[in-house]
Length: 51
Image 1 (tube, rainbow, N blue to C red):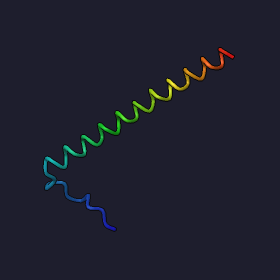
Image 2: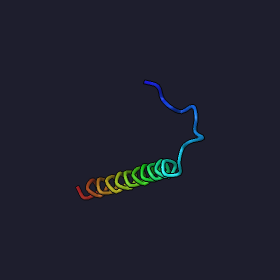
Image 3: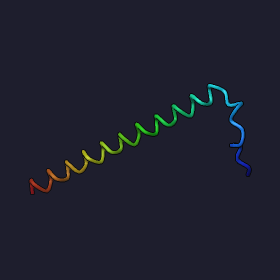
Image 4: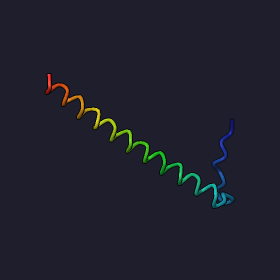
């Protein structure tokens, strides 16, 4: 399988924007997962305190 990364001169705007959007989505997903993780840790800490 040959990856076509040699020539970027014919990349159209749509493709460039799509790549950018996917990158943004990926970033916001990572942030969400991070928030969920900290929430989960907080809940766990509370449970331990309550015992």
